[in-house]
Each structure stands twice: as structure tokens, then as C-alpha cells.
Image (cartoon, rainbow, N blue to C red; front, side, top):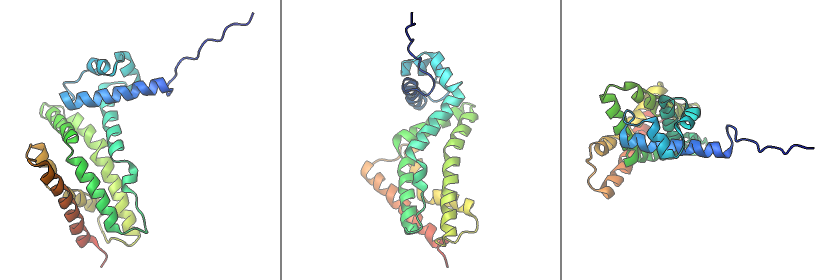
Length: 216
């Protein structure tokens, strides 16, 4: 007599597991922003995601790794690698303006600023490793991508830069100005005026950068 085949269990990477993983990441992101890292427990994340705590641990191992994955997923969603794509046929000013506007708006976004505040709160409470995780997955990743873009522009003769890593830091500083700090401290009074200033500051930063590094 032939035995009845048993249904195959869901293994890692199957749709059901990926849905749970996505739910955990979304729950963790919301709770980290709301309660900071130290105030967020794995129990709370499991409850928010509608899964067991064992499921959370099986997907991410521990809270540090989960936090890293939350930051990594968030950064990759907001700033995919294509953001820093170089086109030899395009004007370098147009490329840098695109990058500048995307970065400036994201850095001043209220939800992203909420994440920064949560991280600073944890650092103030003596948990600097969480800030380091944020730094590694966020600014360090975007810095490397920005350096690659600038080096490609140098190689194509569109920019003249001796110290590309330093120029990348200068670029980010110029396009941000004090706009993110104003949002951080709650000093963005008029939404329309503030949004216009974000763009004007970013574009002015690109113009200054090009004056410094345009080929001579």
C-alpha cells in the first residue's frame, strides 16, 4: 500500500518565512524609533510582529544583529546603490545634484530624524555600540558609494580631486548644512519654507563643490 506523501515543511527562504522576516523587521524598526534600542525588548518585537520570540531569534540571532539588519534594510531601501550611479555621458553637475537632493531630503525626513534621536538617546545612556552599528551600516556605506562615484568622475576627467575620500566628506557636509540639526532640535517652523531651504542648500552645496573640483 502506497503511503500518503506528507506536505513539505516551510524551509528557510520560503514565502511564509520571508513574510515573517519582513514583519519582524517592520516591527523592530517601529519600536526602535519609538522606544530607542535599550527600551525595546525581543518580546515586544515578537508581539508587534505577531510571531513567537523563538521565531525572532531563529531569523536574527540576537538584538544587536536584528538592529543591524533593520538599519541595513532601511538604508538600502532609501538609498539603493543605483543612487550613486555614474554616467559618463551625463553632466557631472546633474549627477551630483540628484545625489544631493535625495540625501538632503532623507536626512531631514522626520522619521529618519526620529531614528537619529533614538540612537543618540541610547548613546547618552552609555550604549555607544548601537551608534557604531548605525554608523557602520549608514554613513560608512554611503561614504564608500560616494567615493566610488567621485573616483569614476575623476577617471573620466569630469572632476579634478587629489583626495577623493576627503572630498566625499566635504560634499556631504556642504549639501546638509545645518538643515538636519534644525529638524533634530525642532526648529523647522514652516514646512514649506523648510522644504525649499533643504533643496536650495543642497544645490548651493553642489555648486560650491564644483567650483572647488572642476577640471582646470
